[in-house]
Image (cartoon, rainbow, N blue to C red; front, side, top):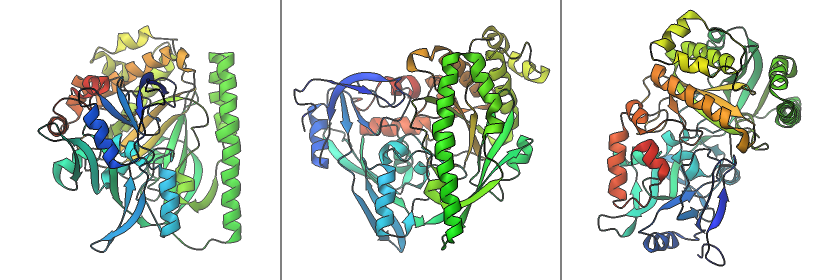
Length: 477
């Protein structure tokens, strides 16, 4: 249970390379060991680690971090005629899927884009896919290690009420997650067709028939490309269908996951003009009007962990998406030096919130060098996940950078302006686990459930052991 062989702090670096810190790192082998660590460090600060895939400082603790990877059990179970799976906090999503499939013909009700995450990390930050609620929404029960009113470490189970709604996406502030229970659904296939669209309106019209669709907007040519997706019942596929799915999957792995990103890294080395030129080439590089039917996990997940990057993701309501996209286009063009001016309706909107002059002062300071990604998120039954009590579907807007960590200052400035703008104009909610420029005052305005969440967290942690600089800055905890 020692932190390191000599008991000294260990250097910790997240996937994006933008969060680096030192802390005592434990790897508990049992729930009792977790309780022992909480007792030992009750006067310090403790955060649990997932796969370190978050770009925000949500997991950073200068004192103690817990690597929960040894608590990785997977146990299918039935309750009241329904199928669930009990999962240890440190189990990675891919391992969970592999072991669930080996034991049953079932899968999870939704998937995020990355299966390298642990189940506890995924739900704690509201990980989501496209066309359904987030993983957090589907959590049926959470067991966690926290403190009772007397400051004694205890194990607490939440399976109903506001306690469960808080624990479904708690950002580590309620305690150390030990295990979760989630419902499972029959395995299914996904039919996918990649198609270019002439307008956002045309693209959004595909969702009733293709509810799992996700899409991109390519900067500087402002072209829309959609991965139109719909679920298909599990059935035996012909040899031709399987071969076609494999070939498309292999082609995407080589051409997009590998070659395109290598081209992007090369373009960034040559400078802004090369990055813009690559974006203008994207419509000629992407394979379109091709369909496949494949296992859900193979269609809905990505390999974008091959190249170090950083991402900010903002969530806006469906009814506000067209206007938000106009603001986004204006911001990208101005920051990239592509536009001397912007449309008067957008300019008037920005002026009304004192955002226009600030935007124009950044003209030519940052080139967005990657497509802008959009995914659809349905309402979550949680207190503070991004989809918490959303009155209508939300669309996430992802802004990626593949610049090295020490070259992201201009990206940081762009994200700070965009997040502030989108929050003020559209009540946009940033993803908790990604680049997060907003502070507690702005967060409180867009999350009505935050006061209840704070109360529940304080009840589990009177002395603030599970809090850090992130929870203070972002949540006011």
